[in-house]
Length: 308
Image (tube, rainbow, N blue to C red; front, side, top):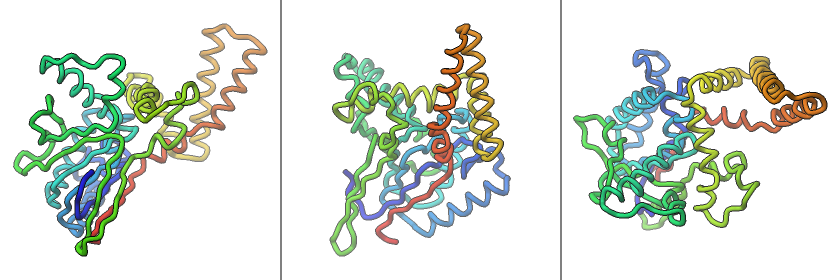
């Protein structure tokens, strides 16, 4: 738990995504310049803070290219280095950047332990490596680098960067000595769409919730966006759905027709199985949480400051 006097929280910046608030492919683009100036002005008005909290989906690892994310993070850190200063940046990965957390935790608990001559965790301990963990770039015992620190401007002092998952508790004290607690979490496990494995087996604790549904998060929110031509199809679908109305319906219908055609052809299906397949696909569309998923790509800004 952090004991602080002030903090700002940013959520869902989705750096790297072409519809993101701070998409920086063209630094001279009017929209980017306007958005950057607005955020810069806000942060300057809020002033120095004990913590800047990045509350999930900081990176768009689901659909954006790694080169685009790298570029946008450098641009974002350049902006942050001109504001504040911040004693600590706390990063809580969400579902769209869940892979960053898994990769970092595995580096620490597998590669790091091997490098230190320690046995890596076995089946029984491995699920406990990914929940309620905290890694800091200022920890001299951390066996690997937190790569985000390398993206901070070289001519500016790097603040402490802490990566933790799945939540962050802060005790914020006011000038008169009173205090309040704030719990920050991205909240993807509060929604059924991010924990489908629970329908097969009930998790007994938070570590099992993460372990069981990790395969779903990694597949949907990372690997699906980095799979060549398959990823191109996914981006087309999301792009069409984002337009809404007839365009969205057309994209979904095209996808369902493709799936139906491939299943029928490859499995050599005949009636009544084909009829059941059509019914199943229609049911999936009606129950699909895709609209919610697309809405998550929007930028939301939330501040929590005791000084405001």
